[in-house]
Length: 427
View: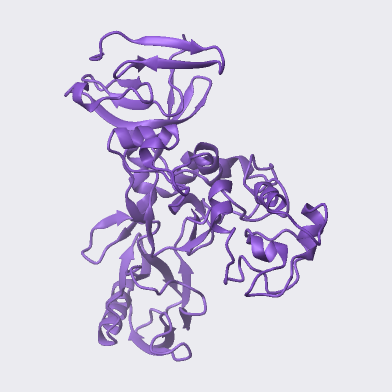
């Protein structure tokens, strides 16, 4: 294909196959191979490190890179990823109001305004849902609440926080009503994902990329999330930095004797290698099947399916996707795309090297080398990625640039990482 003769050879010393040529096609793709559409929109694969833009057919299109292969099934990541909000707005279903034409008074607290201990007084006189919504909208306007809206949808009154671009986010202590009931309008089919995906040590969030975590947490940390301020008597859900593990931190007294007794031959003289084995131990692997829903939490396509078509009403009256990161990923490869689960992120990208100190994209792992070659977005272990599982009603799971996994507030824009699974013909 555009590159003349192709040479394939076997290195007897390493037992590795090398391919010499340009834009070499293969029907048996491996990790790092480039995914293309040909002129007929048929999927084709180009061997990693053979792509050459100058001889690539003009009618063809590069769309992604193979990140995992299992038998005749390959998982591919998109050439591009975009920063999206996991959830665009926070809507509540309002109930408990009285439609008898008489005046009623309720109290509302919206994100602590005017203060965290002060409620607005909302008076309404309504006989229909429409009248109630109209008066609720006027109440928001009168009090200058431009980040909030109210509307009727599918026979329900919705009170909605429209702006997740500020540091404010939903929390029960910040938004509350007396005389009305506010119910979070989130899908019940995708409940918050539990902390059960670490195989070793205490169940919890753990580490998704051991190499990145070893680089970041080798240094002393001021945060008590990574430098305990009380004695540790079980494996923490977060990685403990090396100085805290060793009992030599300048920010905290020694609280990690228990960890050293678990991981060190001589707890009084820990080694950096023993701390690194501890980091390996809390890195995600194949999760245990600890609950009836466990297989579902592995499958980003299933989780994305719960969320991708849920909509909300924007201020302009248009219906838009509530879970924008999921919707964006679902449109990849003619609608086969999805946002990966925690398990899939580790399985597909746990070994990427781009993002480690001194590693450039053109010399990184096969996935990033190919993304670099085709002008795509990097998939680095120093980035923060959305995952398809919800951490709670108002937080989503994300992989942090420090190498661990935690929940993030929904107003943050984070890169969305579209994946898709393709079936190869059986030959």
